[in-house]
Length: 362
Image (cartoon, rainbow, N blue to C red; front, side, top):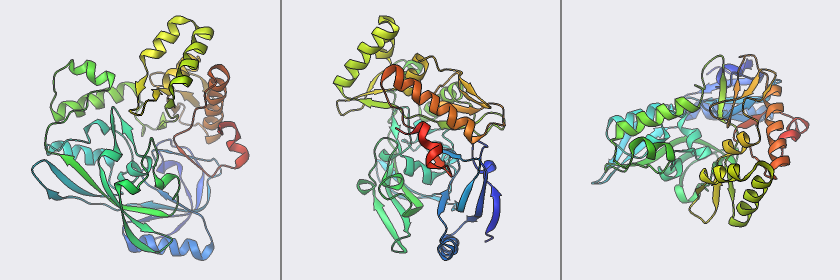
């Protein structure tokens, strides 16, 4: 395994943006991971673990540490009963290829998470969700290397701290664990999840097959999200998180929207809400961004995507990280000013100073 110096990080991200990493290596085994961590420890370097680079914005200066790209591969069925199958999947596997593999074998559960870029490890870190499904419903356990105890640990689902776009791996235990494998449980029984509006309308009450659901999700995503690996309009997927409000907060928001934008806009926003199962109201951040007139907003080479305003695209292919951060800061500021709501960012922001992050801090 080579540990390289001053490696540009832009090609390793779907945004195609960012400066170099002071040190960089790719690990295909646990032993290589340990070697990289020892290298960093001896030099007192911060370590950033990189997967598919799909939920990441790297600063223009880059990262003054070691970027460790995880390339662990492998997937297999390890158990089956009358209703389900258990899969062991390496963290470096491409997530959508794993979904395609599962769908092709008639295993239900992951199809609504089709066409999401990134690695399998990142799916658990972010508790990725889409079209009514979340990774937390599929992950039975996560096998990790604990950098604190220097040991292998199996973390069960209940201990992963899964919540909306959250887990212990990106919150309370951030940086402690390196994910090696996921154990997923999928169903052998037909179980289409069609609560999402676009899917419900597409199938109009009938129960589709597994391949049909995957194809529909891919078509919907393609119509709303620019292909993230495209050289000209790279992006990091959803840049802003959806909001969750209690009933009082939501009623106050509707009153504010009606006063500022008119009753029609309040009714339109109300139609876009959905329940989170805990008595709260979830609102698509895209609807709020559009309501505030920010669709197609540009700064430098970065732009708010027209079809899906949750996404910031590297429209020119030459956008800088500063362009993206400035644009995101403007969106956060305008939504706060007009609606009194705070938008949180989804991507990891790597290599930025505290001063640079002030514009997007909540």
